Image 1 (tube, helix red, strand yellow):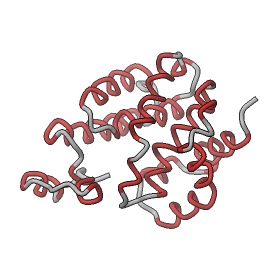
Image 2 (image 1 turned 180 degrees about the vertical axis):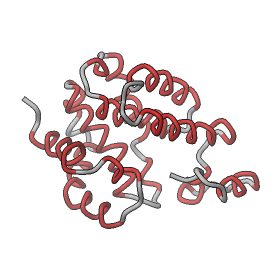
Image 3 (image 1 turned 90 degrees about the horizontal axis):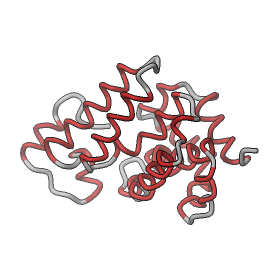
Image 4 (image 1 turned 90 degrees about the vertical axis):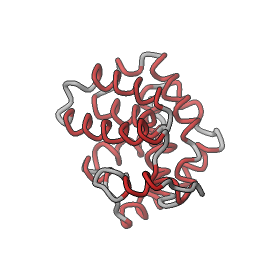
Length: 187
């Protein structure tokens, strides 16, 4: 039986919320997520939800908390990225456990997002292979592929996401500043 809080997260994300809502900036949506799930996020950060890694569905809920929701809770703040490393470890373990074989396409997509959020090119290469294998039949495959390609362009060019520089206290190069003035340069 699935954990009640994990189920609440999954139901909200995959039943109650339109897919496109997740990939746009919306302050009201951020506030709603904060009210509903911030306590869960803090528990996950403090390793209180680590057992969620032992179930495919609960693992997706954990990844959503640490990766996607953190970006909503801490938009324009370096805290948005604090759990990225831990989240990638969880994702790699989930892949090793065969969870991609047990989940539906939308949940696989969200489980894999930490790989494209990574600033490590090897995560992108691995992630692209997984998307091509597990999401090729997804109804939004072309959109997903384009978004992932756009993200990888920045990593190949700069070895990092220039749009994160300001909140992470990094100095942008002239080429990064030019890139940031183009479409598909900030997410």
